[in-house]
Length: 82
Length: 404
Image (tube, rainbow over all chains, first blue to last red; front, side):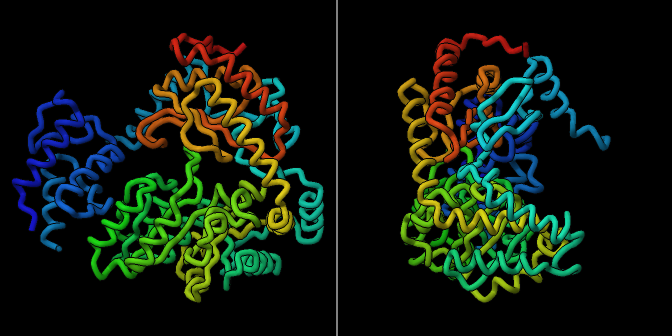
């Protein structure tokens, strides 16, 4: 089972390192407009998150994702399914 | 948000190119002189970016076959095969493709893009899992999206990462579809197909290999990477295109699985598209016969790409992959790549410039594709143009970019 706080912490750490700490990361941070990440960059970032939790994150979950919270919630749902 | 607001980014990018006086995406080839030469901006130009791998676009036998079909069957079929009927030649081409691969059957699609779209959308649907190489072509991504299947990417050319993801799928792995390409179109690198096949043998699943850039190029008979690596029988579906080594337009899938014939009835990109014209089918059938016995063409192509690859290596350029018919020079930055590309064009060499996000890892690429029809002198001229521009890469010196 994936726990939301751990997902959020892992995501934040990955985002922090990939943006070199330029932008503060909160649950409300917008991945595209604030962090300037395109969908491909988000997918590449997820490769590390996938390894961390030993899960595969389907590309389709990104469709409705805008903020760090959206992404963390989507990943949490995957854990519930499994 | 207005209907056209989404184009603001594109508009700005277009304006930047106009200011630079560089337009790599709107190149007009004013005259085609041969498979390897054309006139661009009034200048005789070597075409080294057209994927014309075997140089068959002007082969006398393919031209004659197309002319005969034009006179006998007219300019177009005016409809889809499902609704408006197949011409006999469509079916003959499918039989010939199946025989070429020793497969049970084949489906012909109207373009290479539609072949991937039609196979993925026809074969998979909601509830199915597709594992695709992260660097897959847009047609593969689009096909998956159209299918509604669960799409899982694995790290490019990384069989261990694929294995990890198959393991995570548990019992679902046995029905998953793995999708790879023979030669990846951006960098020209090959899939580690033997290792991928080993993963499939361990976990089950089905393998689809897109040989768009390797058909006619690799393997003794030109059947692509799977033939070269001795794993043809392990590929459940082989997709290919007519628009590169076969010098036409269209695409296909071959398979030994009886279900292939049912894909026809479930594939919207097959059902709702007009079928290829008689001339296209006739020239493709002729080109396939030439390709199958074209060991000399493959040998010449190989000589040519080795010549360019070693020439550019010797100049100190960073190349994207070991030698293949796609030779990509890695340049770091977008503007530098655009200027470099323009510098080549002004020296009479047409290649492709590839920019992020279409490229892997955010790099900018100058991408050349070789042909069996290139002469050694043409390749030396391409190398000379690269040599001339070598200083602009190292020093980042601005190349004059306005067209003269």
